[in-house]
Image (cartoon, rainbow, N blue to C red):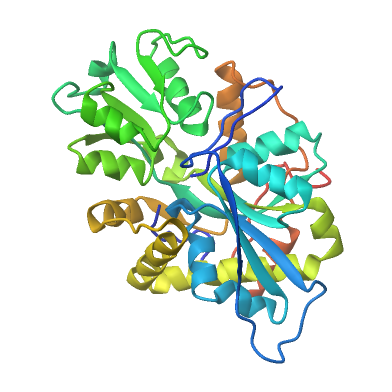
Length: 369
């Protein structure tokens, strides 16, 4: 397996408080659920330095590594007698709050809530320790109203949330087209409508929006309702890769239990390897996990195209996180953040080296830089 080898699959949600609105990632609401689920531990398995590790993630295919890793026991296998306890979240702020409160130790989360959490704590609460997924964001439109990119002018296009990652990406794309939009109201040459991903498909069917710049599986849900893909955001990035899901850890837990953190990262790397080797089984496993967590599996017409639009990898694609933050600053939604020290890839690179894989780069944003 390679840290840069593409796997295919399906981003996370966050909002801000007192700081200027920061880019976030997609979710399905604002609730969090401590599901209390604990993985089965093999008899006589040796514990690491902690009895338990509390892991958080979203019931969302963008968090497929966590979904599959827990579902298949691949993360637990690396932890031996140290038991995994899981909690699921539907929004980035809830997961950051849980991390700050010690309710979780490690989490799969989008880049924007990680940036927001790090900057609001003055760099004292978390580190990004690994990558998980890239891609899975599309501009989908009503083909009867929009035939080309130029037809977007004067139309209503939804994004998941004011200042969220897709909102920032769309505003940046609009600016590069030479069009003007007020970032706060969304009014201008294009009307940017901030719409929760849960209601965007209904808004599209009702005709109140003409399209949406959204992550999977919302994009594929819209396509199932007759929309067409006008642009895949991956096409706007070097090598068609940009971070959509990171792995974070509380600095306290990292300092006190580095062996546990290393085991989780090794489990993540090996889960990604298993997904690459068993794509159909992995897709089914992730959908089964979603069904158990949400009560509803994704239909094949949504699951299959969403699966194909995500790249799973171990590299956190740090340079793209820096670029995403710069886009938010340019759009007037974020004060220039100090991101030095947000990454600590020491343990990830130790794992990758042991797997004979290339090390990941922190783009100059690592500890001690």
